[in-house]
Length: 276
Image (tube, rainbow, N blue to C red):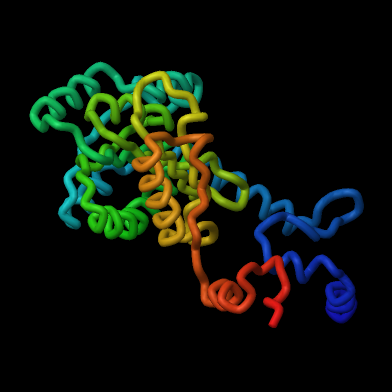
């Protein structure tokens, strides 16, 4: 039986591709159904995605870790009182509750003049993503922000927050730019994907057309360094052009050893070598 299975595996052209992707391909079949192993794997992935959606936001732990790195934080809450309201009423997650708005106004009054960048962290649809990736990503990003000399607000932590809540936060703080780190909707192979949404001149009422998104920030997706590089490019271009969103394209050049070699030798990888 094992020899027969090995022969079937050897003859299956999909197996080489399956080893390169977490996508569910070449699962096989048992009669008209999936094999038991593939079905159990699917159910396990689905359970992980559900758990990620309902995992409570450990804002206290994140705040403590930020303080250990010398970064102050401020805890706010959206108008969605609990997870049930958050999932049923997306509009409530896009704005602060009255107490949080008042707290932020008091902070802004005590620190007049605004800031260049407000960094917001919200649980979104996967607190797991925020727990895993916020600190290592911020470590890479803030290295580059310091080099630019931009002023920062405290890291704003938002419970039950959605992307647009950063617009209200940025407006109340008088921030030139905001970036919100938020847990993305879990997939069956990515329950911990972190999304970054950047807005120049944030204010209440903006649509997604005014934002730039960098998605799938995680160890198996876009690396922290790559995401920080792309975000810094967008922020620098936004300051230069005074806009963000659909009119601001991500044209950041990311060199690798191979691409650098190709550029120097060919000038363009789509073209042949230069003529002598």
